[in-house]
Amino acid sequence: MNSRKEEIFQTIELHKQGLTAVDVANILQIDRSNASRYLSELFKENKIGKRAGRPVVYEPLEETVHVDISSEVSFESLVGFQASLKVSIQQAKAAILYPPRGLHTIIFGETGTGKSMFAECMYHFAVESKMLKKDAPFVSFNCADYAQNPQLLFGHIFGIKKGAYTGAAEDSPGLMAKADGGILFLDEIHRLPPEGQEMLFTFIDKGVYRPLGESNQVYEAAVQIIGATTESSTNFLTTFNRRIPMAITLPNVESRSLDERYEIISLFIKQEATRLNQRIDVERDAILAFMLYDAEGNIGQIKRDLKLVCAKAFLHYRTYGKKNLLIRKEDCSLQVQKGLLKIKELSERLDRFLEGKGDFLCFEPGDQDIVWSHDPQRNMQVYNEIEEKVSSLIETGVENIDLENLISKDVDLYFEKYVEELTQHPVHKELIPEDIWCLANRLYDIAEQELTRSYSEKARFAFALHVQSTLERVKDGHMIVHPDLNTVRKNLKSEFQVAMDLSTIIEEEQHVEIPFDEIGFISMFLAIQVKQAADLPLEKIEIIVLMHGTATASSMLAAAQELLGTKNGQAMNMSLDMSVGHMYDHLLTYVKEHKEQLDNGLLLLTDMGSLNSFANLIFEETGI
Image 1 (cartoon, rainbow, N blue to C red):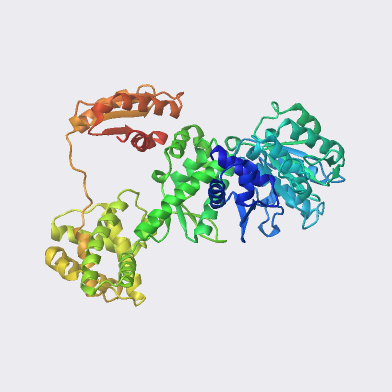
Image 2: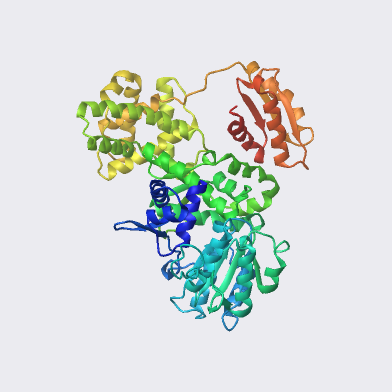
């Protein structure tokens, strides 16, 4: 905000009754058109309000005076209320219950530790315990907002007496008066100027205060002060420490347990799922990365980083028409991904935490439970993809002929993407009934003989999933329509003939009638091949063997070179007392120093643990 606009903003803040553009121009001795322009900008930025009329009157925005009890935040709803926050909550309850009107309190904590929410919890507890009336005010104010203007800050908190300065045409109550009978929460209380501190101390000591410009009368108010600061308790002003009896310190995220960090993450993702009214599936490594990374901004930063990754997942969901949002570790920022480097040093605790859990954490909107499961993307069904595509294209008015052309292209791409995606993850046979798995394997054995080609286990798994969904669809009476059957019959003659034979076997064993269009889909499964990257001579690819132990990588380098048929290679040994972060920095430095030699790529051969995540991190940081 430039200096002139800031000056106009402060002028409006000092005149609670409101000012017109002409008033502002006269007070500040500036051109009326400039005053009007800046006032309009401030209104658009939601920094000031305005009252319609002729002329328009601009006025300060009202502070939130009361917290709606319907959006109640209780101590029991805080993560860690029985663990890391237990002592802090006991102190807070004691401060609220102390007669006659509670103890003034200061909350210490780093940025993002939840000081404002904790103060709200104190307010709700005061209402619940009948120390405050149900409609008692809770006034919140950040002292840093006006730290550069001590007079404005003083007047905002304690009020302004008519005639206190030029333009003060009437008495203006401050936050202290608005908070009478309730709680005044002063965030960043250490930013109060000396005059404000002195008046606050007078109120704390005697229960009275004077508005700005008042020299005779003092005012009383029944207000409990809760202050918050990012300063440490040892560096905080002794005058505050002496006058505010209750000091509460909130822990930072780093000092919280893994279980609490998991709860914090789950809480925020659940909130996003409910807000978007959409299921969110999160890969286990992404959950671990958020649990372990260095969040310097504490809970606030975790919430921002989770919102960012949810926004990216939502964009992908909307762009590609997915059924739900999916978050993988690759979607997280580099800073978050680096949390995986701590897996080694916390391996025992993580093993206990992960015992019996699946590969993905699934968050449904609303009150449904959060559950661990295997890969939720594995249940993809070709037919649903086609039906959704047909519906969306029909809505746009696409003609039938164009519809077939558009869908046939999408089906080809979908098949390639479907099988290729499955190759990136372990096969979970338990997702498929044993009889279907055996049937799919037998069908592919026949296809291998008839077509003289081989199919990997993952290709068989993809086909088995498809067979399962086909049988379910047929038994439920749903139609199966292939949008480009004639092209498949013409281009995949051999596969189509074999597919006809396989469909007969399915019919005989499962006692169903396989639609003719389904043979087209089976043909495509028989024809699809997972794309292989173009071969590049290994002599042109840098190889690094990276393993735990003082000489393990060195001893394995020769074996790796012989197996790969190359003389290239470097060995990096990670001694057992070396931290994962130090090892990563060592590798990163090497890559940056030899970047010109790595134009054709880098092959990392690692053994286990956090080292397996290095390749993706190096790519994120260097593009190699």
